[in-house]
Length: 103
Image (cartoon, rainbow, N blue to C red; front, side, top):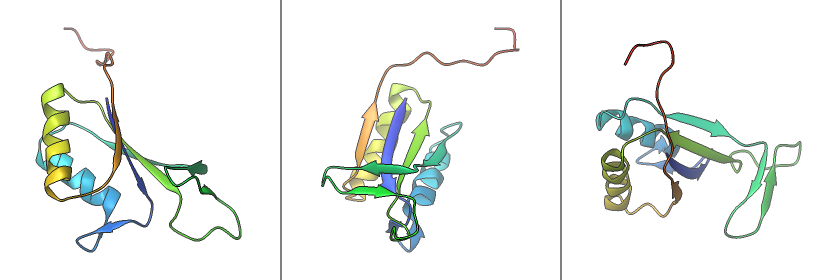
C-alpha cells in the first residue's frame, strides 16, 4: 500500500495536487486510488490544522491511498520525484484481493 500526504489546496501545474497525483496514477495503469480529507492533523512543522470556523481553507491534510504492486509504487514515486515534489509517503506490505470472484 502506498500512501501519499498533501494538503487539500496544494497545487501543481495549476491543478489540485491530489487530483494531479490521481491522474498520474491512472496514466500508469494503477487500478485504483482514493483521496481522503482529514478532519484534523499536523505534519512535520508541528502546526495543528483542524476543520473549524477559524481554520484557513485548504490547509487540512489529504491522504492518497493506492493498493499497488512494488513496481507500481516505485513507478508513481519516480514520477513524484521527477516533478521535484517534496511529499511525505508511506509504503507498506499488505494483502489485498477481491471477494466474490473465483480465483
